Image (cartoon, rainbow over all chains, first blue to last red; front, side):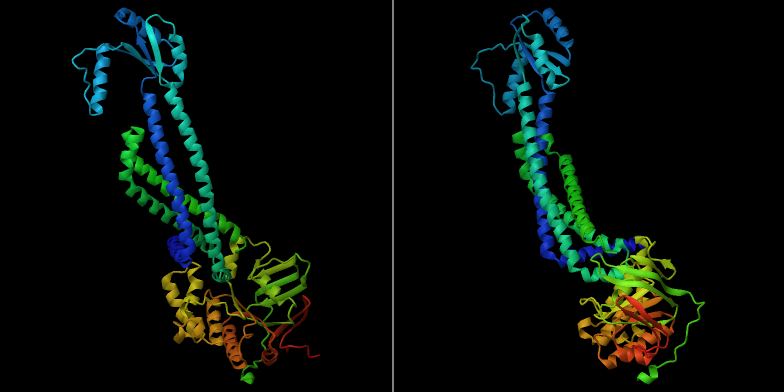
Length: 297
Length: 246
């Protein structure tokens, strides 16, 4: 019961304090929202890019186009040799018929029909090599270069490295931007609590003199900062939820990955927004209380 | 009025547990200002003591040491059996609930009513709502403000504001009440009303230490007087007047 009384007291005082300096509190909350919107944007873009990366990783690492009419016995020997190479997970033979079927399927996916005007085409046979790690693509390609059964080798290593570079760049820029906005948010919350402490210095003095414990004096201020972070987080979650439907098709179009816009993704994002909001609010107010109420008792 | 208050001084038996004990207490501020020098004082439970002296004599420092707002640079201060120098920070709130304090400027919260000002001191120490509803009216009755409980401080006279401050100081039923110039902002008639209240509180068993410049009150009351000059305790006399009489 004493703990419940303490919590109730602190929450009520924090709520009153938040609205007593409404302008300052709302300014701090706005910066929290700005930071969390930036965080959400970064999370969404990085989530999409990661999905793209996983997509590339899951696809063929190396494709070896075979010479025409290679006997199946030699294909099997080649497959066995490739499978013995380090970093190779799987080797699949794609016949010319299967390649043509895939081409037609790709057209269908884009709402078109492969129209050959009555002619017949024969595509190349190939082996698709799955890798345990995309970084093995170069070594596998080198090992296969010069083999007489193979006409040409293609890999998606370049795509992979390019995407990896983009992700790294976006992550770095995003983290720097987030860090700067995060510092601004901390500064705003520290100031908000400092002003609250000064504006209630009379109350604090009376609390000290009548024997209020440190917890009773400090926690309302810390909760006030947490409240600021929580309100900012809730506003951001609402904004993201409202913007989610328009964002989804863009995500699918840009990243080609419907899984990147799943409900689970939105739930994880909401949890992160809430966690970061509460964390920043608590940290800012804790820093302020530590420096401004150090000699409170 | 003053004759009625000129009560015979009743010496408190030495066996009574001291509420305050200062032993060789010295206080020098970081800027080199010497506020107290070798102060030795024992105040037993139930005593009524005046602390007098000119401005800058060390009265405020004396009080700040008692409520552990500061620690002495020399000697020991023992309040209600606790050595304040060795007291942990976490124990200070409990000490302060044993000491009520009122100031010349009342220090009431202007946006709270009389009732709320008194209740606030209980709320911030975790007292239950039921207990607050029981204690606050009783205290407002004691100080004669039960009919003004919904008034804001600005709607009260100086004397009523000081009574509110006294009610707030008594919420934890303290062993000692420290009054720092409580009549400093009051007219003479109101001052005597307030002194009567302090006597009443003292009669109920609470030790009272009152810092004052009010010669008329000290001379009329004839209680124990501690006189400070330049940080030194120059007089500790029972049944005494404001100035030395010999």
